[in-house]
Amino acid sequence: MRKVIHKWFWVWDFEKEEKWLNEMAAKGLVLVAVGWCRFEFEDCVPGEYKIRLDFLENKCARVENEKYIAFLEETGAEQVGMMSRWIYFRKKVSGDNFQLFSDNNSRVHYLTRIIRFVALLSGLNLYFGCYNMFMFFQIRNYSYINLLGIVNLLLAVIGGWGVFRISRKRKKLKAEQQIFE
Image (cartoon, rainbow, N blue to C red; front, side, top):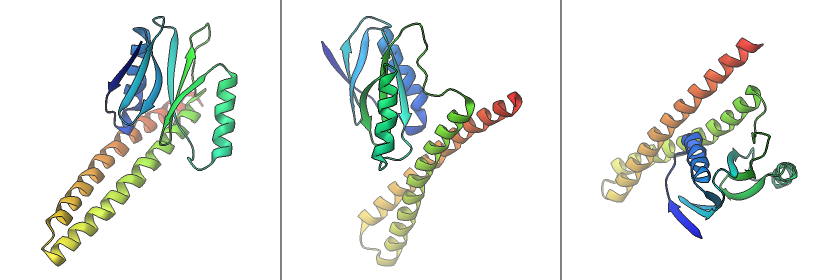
């Protein structure tokens, strides 16, 4: 039996999303498809699968991405779906633990990719927000320009908060990495 759940996660809450997906798998519902705020599950043996998320280096680098996905599939992981640059994998749990990152350095690199993506989106929203507000004050007639400007500025602030949160995680991992070196 298939079950669809609509749920929203911010980009910086990827760990929370992965934890929720694994809790669903532990309850006997494994992820089979993803969409915009849409997760489709199928019945399975509780705890049979482990779910992992990854953020691809570059959406346009198809050859490198295909090689990476093929490598993971050789290890027994299945690609469940993809949203933008996020890719979802599942793997039947066996004696080994299903991890995508082998050390802190690769995890730091992963967080850096996410920070750059969120910072780019935030910067674009800041630019368009300021532009729309400037246009509003120049024209003073188009209230939709003011509304768009406010929405863009709000999204820029929210994105800035996300960059801050991910940067804290990255800083903590870097500190741990220095301790072990």
